[in-house]
Length: 227
Image (cartoon, rainbow, N blue to C red):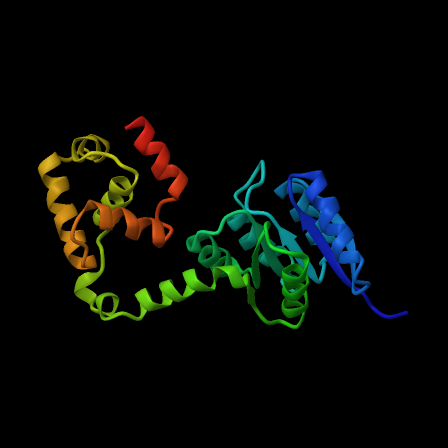
């Protein structure tokens, strides 16, 4: 009998797990050995089974999926981890790969993308959903740009905090209260970070934050409605 690669599915939705199982096992290359709905269950079963491939969602009831990815790599070092998520922001992809995932695809993608990812990570290679290629290129262009290579352009911790809060539509006064500094100091930090990033105004700053995944578009829209 030909060996079938073993697969563990981690997702809080039973119907989604069932759908994945049906698609994967129909290819006759893989065998689902466990379905878990929580991180605790997943870690226990991964430790016992050491599956060839672990497929997981980033949204779980008891643990962040990126943290779970890190813990799974410790519990079952031989397992290849693949994220299937609704999150298309590039920061989720980067953090997942940094945590140990070999593959990342979107839940809205087709079965061909799913199987391509499975087959590629099965051989120890990496796979990123093709629909995310433009965002990845933007990230690489930013990383390789002279602006980022110049050590003078690195944002301080305080500037990063303020960038995040400005992008979420907080005013300088609100940011000052949150960080226990004056609004004038906030404006100074804001001016410095915009100069470092080569941004001209708040609109460009917000667009930069959204493009880089620093803040989610939905969070920004919510801030506009409540601000």
